Amino acid sequence: MFFERVIWIYTADRNLEKFKQFGLDITRFRLIPNGISRRLSSSPISRADLGIPETAIVFLFAARSHPEKGWCQTAAAFDRLSGGAAENAYLLMVGRGEEADAVGQKYADNARIMLLGFRSDLDDLLEVSDFTVLPSRFQGESMPLFLIQSILAKVPVIATNVGQIKELVVGEGRTLGVVIEPIDDDERFVEALHEQMTRAIRDGLVVAKRSFNAVTQHFSIERCVDQYTELYQDGGDAAATRSIQGRVPFVRPPLVESVKSRDMKKPRSRRALRMVT
Image 1 (tube, rainbow, N blue to C red):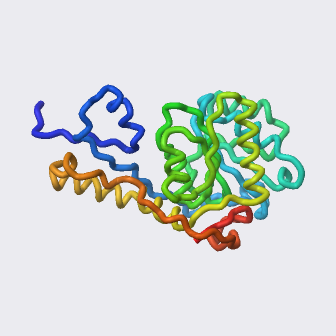
Image 2 (cartoon, one colour; image 1 turned 180 degrees about the vertical axis):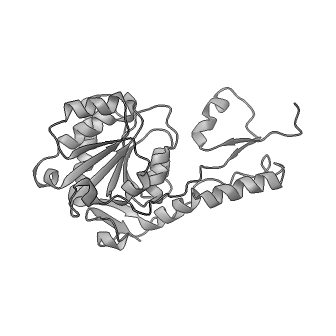
Image 3 (cartoon, rainbow, N blue to C red; image 1 turned 120 degrees about the vertical axis):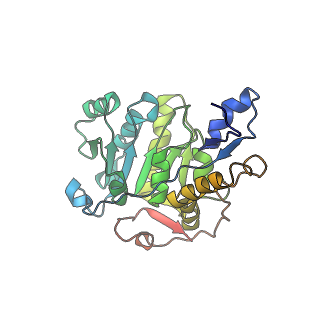
């Protein structure tokens, strides 16, 4: 079968690396980021359903079972929390497989590490969470959907500098959380993750509300549909000549000021969050 023209769609800049590496023509490629709509249940799960106090600080981790996704390292970092911070913090871990089983066996005595298995209500769980943790060291990472879901839910993230995560979280004036380096040494990596979790509980994470709003629009399902519709309507003619308009827009860094946690979103306990306008 022959076509008059072919346009290739990619969802993140990382997808182009191999094509550039081999000197292939990328003029017929167009960036259209994933579009996501939040799926909240009519009867969402509550903290009470999970046995978690409303005043607690909740970290949410979700990943497939892979050694480089950070299951064991996240649990180890959380298990090191001590004092008052430890008594008021919980770690929800979503997913199943060998890595989840390993965490369950090693940290069976820590009741605040809660293995929830496979869940279809991740958006609901984000509503009861204060922070998300994405400690991936997977070199094939580009822009994880869980990261995008966290941003759409306006939940600050603790993530690693792999793929395009750093660019999205703290690039071009955005402040959506903190990013640590994916250190190969497990002990140093766990300690770095533990330090950021401790800081999140003690001092909160400084995040920019305007950054959340801009990125939320960028990854909306409506924008995604509009871009595909435009591509079909113009037949791809413009894709090879115009500069790609799918990048996350620049957001000017706002002045930092602390506000109460509940200024951001009413349903969630956000005592550890410091928001800037």
